[in-house]
Image (tube, rainbow, N blue to C red):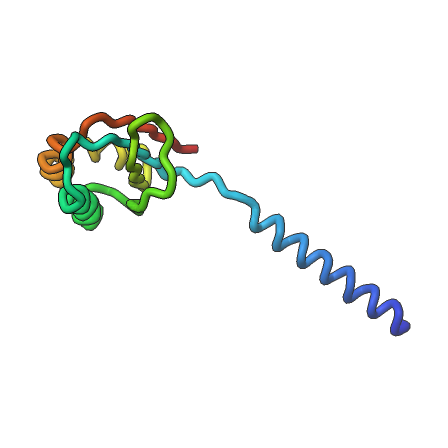
Length: 127
């Protein structure tokens, strides 16, 4: 085999490797459930109260019985007049998401959250 053929073969192998990496890097469609909440706080809610709600989400997520896999608590952008915060909870499955509503830790968190919430919208998505 000539040097030119070896170089061409190595180049072809490199192209195939890169193509395989790019194909493998395509977006996946996980079966987790994203629970996305946008909200307007009640008038007069303090920054400390807002932080206590977010800390409550972290505490709730730490309870394995609730089924929260990941949380997003830092608002970058939220649309809708008067809406000023967004947070997201990711659940392992539709079953864990459905069970979340009746979880004792969720009921406890709601005691803190609901009195401070002016208005909210909820969006849930999965694949």
